[in-house]
Length: 449
Image 1 (cartoon, helix red, strand yellow):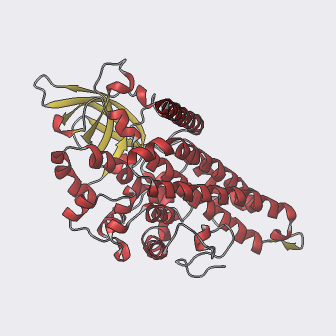
Image 2 (image 1 turned 180 degrees about the vertical axis):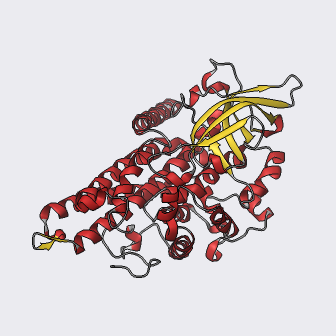
Image 3 (image 1 turned 135 degrees about the vertical axis):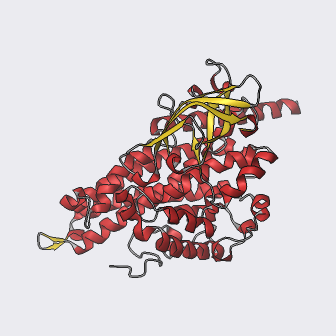
């Protein structure tokens, strides 16, 4: 093995981001490097050591979520900046290794998500993080003081679990067409929620869902959407696991809801604002997908390179074959380009003055980065499969990572915004920004006349 210590950077080419490969970086400082070491040691011991076993079993043991929550290792999934007031109210002032919560920035978050996916497969890590990362923020950002004080303590400390429930059988990327209804009871004290949700990550594990529902009439489009905190253990909720091609341990769930009584106090924010609340988390979600997909790419290329360095055929090591080197070079170059783009977007997320500004300027770019990441994983998985040969078709042994990578590809390209939708959204957002800036320039010139 080229790297006997699993907690130290892997010296094989393409195995690690440039800042861990001995190259200088304008982004990462000593705090980030210490955090990376602390994260890798913790995640390797408590998750990645058993990742393939748990993915095969399609279940991560419950005690792992408890271990992560007790160590404060779910909190980084929220991204940066962290909710300082809410965390301090619970006595949380530091993260793993003594990192102050107020010092946690988006590069710390990026490192966390990279290390969580360092095994090369998505299921075990996303079984812990997805619901927390995307289900808690709507409550944090838009929930009433009463709603937050009631539910956040148990969610932030891991005593209860949450998921984000948006997608439906007939409404995926087309969020405005959600049909799950929330109708008030005659006395106005509850909503009755009815409908279906599908492909909900972590749903089967969760106590609550931050759920997009229709409170307006059927033809109200985006303006008729709201968000509710729905109790998933309530009467009228039926959930079952869906078996998917990759990420099997993540608990992908189908939900059926029939007249589920939800207190009106569980309304997140205001009626009719659900679409806005959903969209405010998209930059974080899509950048996280890109970061973790890049980590998977590195794992599979690293395994491929290690294999061709050791494997002999036709009287010499495979790495001596020009075509083998060519395949690694093409996939590796795509990966390093993606990694550089992710670092720049992370810098923008860290540096832009406000959440609104980041949403406005980065929405199209994060969508395209997410789409690009899926394509790079496809190319890396294909490279690995070809280089491992027959071993890469087998669900065990040296080529297992290549076989699993192929099953992970569509999980990167579809969930979180299907690839074609992301490409289109990216260009539409960039053109919208251009037109807005052009209008500002014209108006500025006119004001000087």
